[in-house]
Amino acid sequence: MASKALIYSNVLKDYIALTKPGIVLLVLITTLTGMYLAQRGFPDPWLVFWTLLGTGLASAGSAVLNQFFDKDIDILMDRTKDRPLPAGSINPKNAFIFGSLLLAFSALILLLKVNLIAFFFVFLASFFYVVVYTLALKRKSPLATEIGGVSGSLPPVIGYAAVKGEVGLEALILFLIMFMWQPPHFWVLAIKYSEDYRRAGIPTLPVSKGIVHTKIKTLIYTASLMPLSLLPFFYGISGSIYFFSALILSGLYLILTLKFVFSKKPNGMFVFFYSVLYIALLFSVMVFDMRR
Image (tube, rainbow, N blue to C red; front, side, top):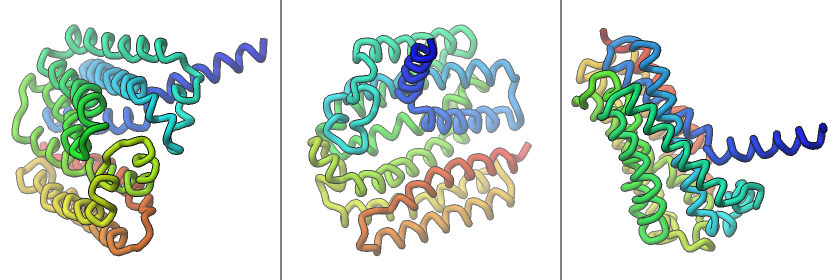
C-alpha cells in the first residue's frame, strides 16, 4: 500500500513539474498587476479567482504542450533530459491529453466567468507560445526568443482586459516592460547552456551569432528597461516610491549585466536569478504605490 502511495505521489509530482509552476506563478503575479491597475484597487474577488484560474490553467497547459513537442530535443540536453517526458516517467500521449484539457478548461472558465476579450488574449498568448514559438520558430530562428516573447508579455494585458473589458495605454506599458524583460532574461540562460542548444540543433542567439553578440544584445535590452520601467510613474500609474524603486532595481540590473558582459565567464546565472526577482519586485512595488 505504501509503495502504491509513493508511485502515485511521484506521478503527481511529474505532472505538476510538466506545468512549470514557477512560470505559472510569475504569470499570475503579472496578471494580477494588470487587474489591480485597471481597477486602481483590488477587483472583485470572484473575478480575480476566475481570471487567475483560467490564465493559470492556460499557462500550465501551454507549458505541457511545449514539452510534448520538444521531447525529442529535451532528451539531448543536460538541462532538460530529466524532465518527465524525456525521462520516460509520463507517457507522451497522456501529456498531450493533459495539456489539451488544461487549455480547454481555461477557455471554458474565461468565456463563462470572465469575458471574451480576456479569453482572446489568453488564447493569443497560448498560440504564440505553442504554435509560433515552439512549433514554427524555435528550431529555425534565433528570433524565436523575441517574437515568442509576446506570449509572456500578455498576462498583464489579460488582467487589465478582465476588469475593463478593453485594453488601454496603461496595459500597453506593462506589456512593453514584460516584452523588453524577457529576451535578456532568457539569453543569460542560453549562454550558459549554449553547448546544450548546439547539440540539440536549436539556433539560439549564442549558437547562431556567438556569445559576444548575445552579451551585447542582452545589455541593449537591459538598458532599454530603465526608461520603460519609469513609464508607470510618468503616466500617473504609480507614485514616487515606485519611481525610486524602479530606478534602483533597473540600475542594479544594468550594473549586474555590465559585469556579466565584461566577464570572460559564460555563467551569468546571478543575472538570471536577479532578473526574476527584478520583475516580481517591480510589479509588486507598482501595485503597492499605485495611484488611486
